[in-house]
Image (tube, rainbow, N blue to C red; front, top):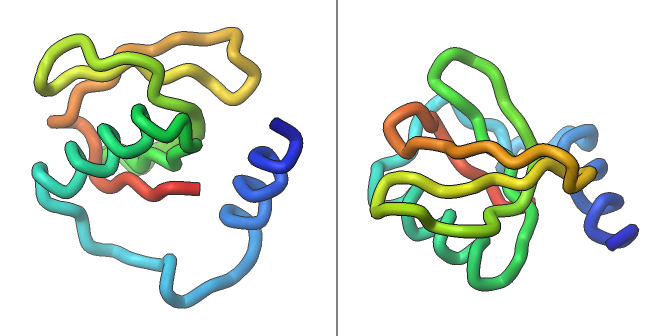
Length: 91
């Protein structure tokens, strides 16, 4: 678990031109990335259309457009809707 947090930290705070993007992703790309993260228990960085972002793990798929996101400290569960997501990146 400690190694995963280390990867997330370096992902967010190291400057890498390949990871910078101002373009959103297609709905199908967001869906496939979230399903991959669910299957492999990977951490994701979710960027929302309002400019906010959060890091966590996808723990469950409720419906075709809704997932459950567990925060990094495993204390907060949140239902996310694909329509509000701007982009998803795997950490």
